Image 1: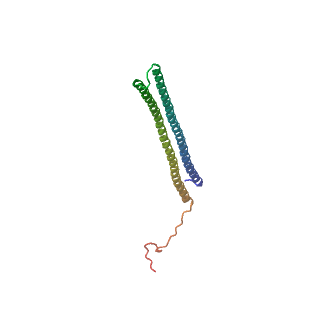
Image 2: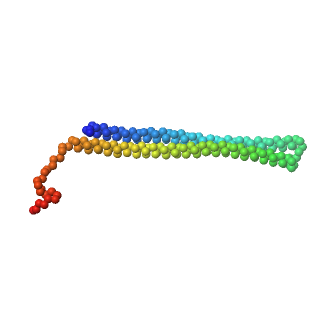
Length: 193
């Protein structure tokens, strides 16, 4: 069955198995947390790209507005050089058309920039969800390691106790039984006093 050395080795093996389960779960959780940190960096980068897309759109829209104002000025200069009165209906229609097309171009650019930004925002949201899921998985992995270690300790403790009990039974001297005489007052005896 084994003596104290076998019992000690079984206990040490149980303890090492429990420690191994905890260490393994911690390593797996650390890897998950690292991946979560990378996902958070991806989220931050996507948010920066979204902001950059909006800023570039605003800069381009402002440039389109300036170009439109320059076109109106050029049209007015050309009309004045041709002897057309700037306040006449035809010239006012030309100015209105240029202004409308300029505004349409400006809004188109802002819309394009916003759609690009929303694409980056979506990437950021997905990265954040991935990071949250990985963080939760890391927590669950750590907990699972502790539970596994606890189960290993209980199972090993039971095994060690069983070995100790068997060894103890083998090493104890056999109990001596006293024989009582006939009618010695045991159960069912009819001894009278």
